[in-house]
Length: 312
Image (cartoon, rainbow, N blue to C red):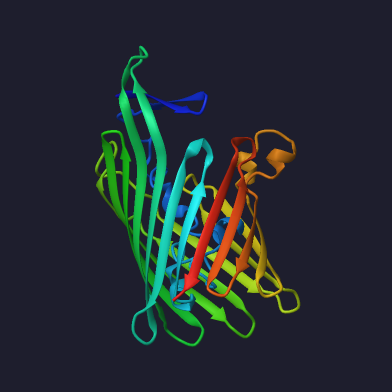
């Protein structure tokens, strides 16, 4: 089975050829639903997505649900623009649920845009949309003075022309946080979940993901540093690193990078050197917080992200 997809963007035409063979090694399940791995917030994007132990907001509640109970009861709306006019919109809300419990809801819609479908002879067959949707329900609880745990379930839907894929995954996490030293350790496990339907096979395999994180707010500098490490789907180990400088009480400067820069960069110049690096700022007002981030993909372009949030 073979499709030829052509997408017109401004004055250029980008041709995407997708060969869907009977052997699903060509299009593995882990190539789908990549939006579930994206940060929910501009703060997360700016800090290199190293947010699995970050609980000052909801940035880390998807990667490690144990962050939920330590996060403030708040809401957030985010818009992220990718290359090729791809964009995503996400939001979350965190609420009290009993004395030592909390519950959170997160929704993400990833829009790949409108495509023109042509056959191999160039005849127009029509237009279609491609998109992903993610709905996550998160539960968090404080067990002891410095230990919290969390669990989440995420329903994922992906649509491509007449094709559709649906899956359910679960994540469990545990976190240690010492408020006296502002030191945190976290570990999360995302299960293989269940495929309800796939693009090729309904029993496609989704790999599990184990993430280890650490963060520390320095005692004598207004700086929060964080790092995440996990094994990628292609047996590659990935490290993500982030930092957040506090400039007074209302302003924040954020930086991040990732070992993925070595895979993204295609040639030795300044643009490729900054691949997978990010920068962002945040402004804290009385009722609202505003954040923005820019992420370099080297020669592949840039990602920009904007968020507004507030406390209940």
